[in-house]
Length: 103
Image 1 (spheres, rainbow, N blue to C red):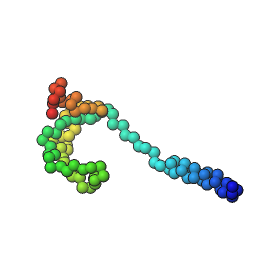
Image 2: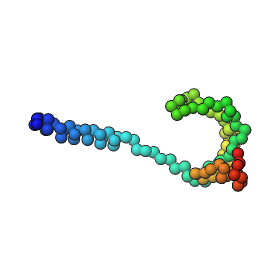
Image 3: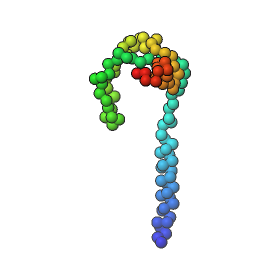
């Protein structure tokens, strides 16, 4: 066996380990946003235009290209419309009134 290679291998492995360890530590910390609480309003916007909207696959999404549809009640009325809910919530739970085939 070559003694020079044996001496270089531990140094190389140590440098590789340090490089990986410091690389992982330099990643930004994950940010979390608490969405729980009673401040959510849910309402089915039944008159919203959607039939002409384009469906995108995940690799096709370009946020600059997607149009924003305003709520039919208007942005100012958005927080007064609908039912108060806490997350997680299911729309059927709030609006079906026990009807299993509600749509």
